[in-house]
Image 1 (cartoon, rainbow, N blue to C red):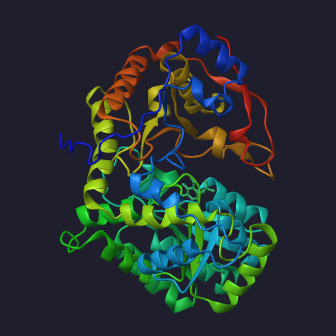
Image 2: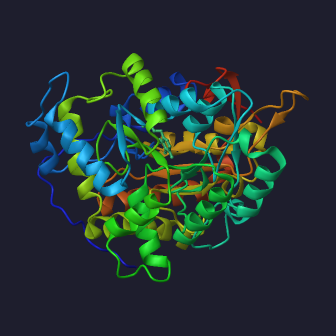
Length: 459
Ligand SMILES: Cc1ncc(COP(=O)(O)O)c(C=O)c1O
């Protein structure tokens, strides 16, 4: 295995606690079989998300002490603006406290009822923000993305035939912009190639449709391009990022991922009029344009994090840590989505638990079992997150893939933690027929997976 050791040493530690199986049994029952309802201090290895869970560097912590909390014109904003502009190249930089606010501001400003937003695959908050604002969120990723066994270097690519067909059938006026999520989280953290970005840009240019990136994991996407795409092996990550964003008209970014911070985000864009409209709304719901929803010290941490994330030793370690967890599982026959993506391992729950039908939420059942048996928290990305009733027929509609995502926080867990995770999942796999399906007993109308309660199906 290519196992680069950690390119950092540990200066501060945060104790984590092992609970007993009996404690976990009680906790998961009280939580309604939903790991979002479990207190974090009862989790041993928390792989719920890589979002906002990164360990900051000494340089970032030092930056917090330089926080300028002036209401207007904080010096940290100017540093933040200059850093973001340097990497992403956009004219206007609008700070927000996290990614979904950036999405909300963008879509509530620009989207008209009945319009369509295509994406490779929308992340759940992106989809929800499009739909909440009266739009239709369409996923146009290449078909290969839906085959969990297929080794394809750029499974996050947009299907340009599907996109062109949509534009021709619906007309340019129904598509105010196209999004591209790099890397494609909901499709397995899979990258998009530079060629696909370039070709998407060329196609959209013909129809004068803007291209926006969901840039949460842009540095990881850049690393994959460097590793896998002809002509990029000798290019620095920053240069690759510059080329990607030169093809776009704007981006939304949750800095909680590749910003290496616990909170933060922004919109970057070139359109003056749109920027002004968004800024007016920003003042109404987030804050003054030189802080958005962030403290001055948080903007400083983002500026420093965005520079650190471009470091190749860091990215090599990061991508290898995730990939090696995948290899340990694959070697034991555990079904995972392939190839391994940038930030997470996705267990293929349909193959892991073939005895549980999709309407009994196999991926959620596996998530629950993982906590109960090993104190590991993962997240379901399957029927609970994306299933819904067809508004016309009233029938349940389920997504293609039924996955459990093990998202690895950045710079947080050691190699030995990853060995523990691999061994625990392998043990669970060997005893998989003991795991039971689930049924919903409570669900909310939007983003139901966060608050749903479920019970075990007997027999
Ligand atoms: C691809 C993608 N877009 C948007 C978001 C939303 O970001 P936030 O959680 O900061 O609102 C996430 C969060 O995980 C994400 O992965």
